[in-house]
Amino acid sequence: MKPKRKQWFGVSPCLILLAILTIAGDSPGYSYVIPDTDQSLCYDTLDTISAPAAGDPFFGQDAQYESPAPSYADNGDGTVTDLNTGLMWQQGLPSEKMSWDEAVAGADTCSIGGYDDWRLPTIKELYSLILFSGTDPSGPDPVNLVPFIDIEYFEFEYGDTLSGERLIDAQYWSSTKYLGLTMGGDSTAFGVNFADGRIKGYPSQEVGPPGRDFLMTSFVRYVRGNDYGENQYVNNGNGTVTDLATGLMWQQSDDGTGRNWEDALACAEDLILAGYDDWRLPDVHELQSIVDYTRSLQETNSPAIDPIFSCTQITDEGGNINYGFYWTGTTHAGAVPYNTGTYAAYVAFGEALGWLMTPDSTYVLTDVHGAGAQRSDPKCGDPDEYPYGHGPQGDVIRIYNLVRCCRNVDGTGIEDTTDNEGPGLHIIGNNPFTSTVTFVCTVPVSGLVDLTVYDSVGRAVHTVIRSNLNSGDHCFSWDPQNDQVNAGVYLLRLITTSGATTIKAVYTGSL
Image (cartoon, rainbow, N blue to C red):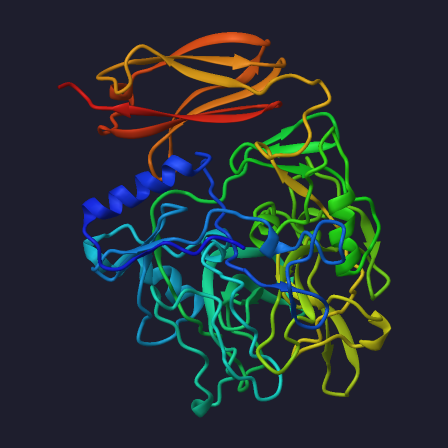
């Protein structure tokens, strides 16, 4: 069972700092911490089940792997700090929904908590708040609704059905624009729906014919703080790619085989690649972390992922070359009594296609929500039973989706085939220290080395080295005064092709 979330209600700044230091002491110290999805229940293709054992059907799903638990601090001034990402968020909602242009411009006049550097979040920042302990209210007469966001910390509203909105009309704008057009010609920005648990692209400008034109408005939640979501990829030369920013190692190429959800889980659990056997199907936060929103089939003739990865081309439902949907281990739970465990979340690295009905009652296949969307498919069944998709935009249903596995760089799988010990890192001299700290790092195998200093909330403050080093011991120093940082606890993070390690360094300043 996953750990319960830490909760901090209206606590003092000193206690918040203590909480951050406590969490940092157990965290890997990467610059880009991916929070857990908060999914603690296991599912088959219909409903919740007891946690399956290794080798059993449905083993290896989201609830069976732990990540840093969602953890927030209510700052008591209308703001909430995410203790994993270090981002500070607007706690409440504006009095009215906004158009995308209004949402972007409104950040300049936002002064919540006395801060003047608020901005509209990127799609990766906004998606870091989504929790898959929520339930999708789509379907007839849902009960026991649970939003996909922590309502103990953040204000939330479903769509206003009394004014003609749908219950699921609780979309939030991001600042990330889609490099392409949706719905046949709409300029598009991505948003997160915390009512039904999806990323979709929405029209960012006025659409429709004169007299029947429409300007979409959505909720806004501003953010401030560090830049979250920048990847640092390394090609390991063995069919894997390491993201030094997150500490995740990825399968570089998918195998081109579409699978239902149960088979996708088994494929990941059975994979042995580059000497590791602890691969897994990524959760939906992890998989969305490798989407490259600066790429799309329409604009760059590529999938929405860094070209360090390979994606299998597919022939889509319209007979065109496209790129696929990729399964996650995360169930997209439905609200009782509809589709409780029937669907699982996927991320579209090609176009998020849908069948739209035209005025003459014919169907047209189009990119309805953009590459980089997160939607969901039935976990099993026959896609031919959904000739025109599912839902209000006719989302195409494939069921047999692709798989890209991941593992933790410092995971507990079998050792590298080189049979070397992991990297080492230790401080020479005093710790705590008053000025310059000197440390020795041990590199087991020649290759790319990243040695970075992070503050207590995971922000990189100094890159000691990011370069190729020969195997052996290497000595380095860091002077905090050069980076103009305050006294406090810092994390020295060493990442090599053989693994990673983190140590604490306590800087007291001049006493």
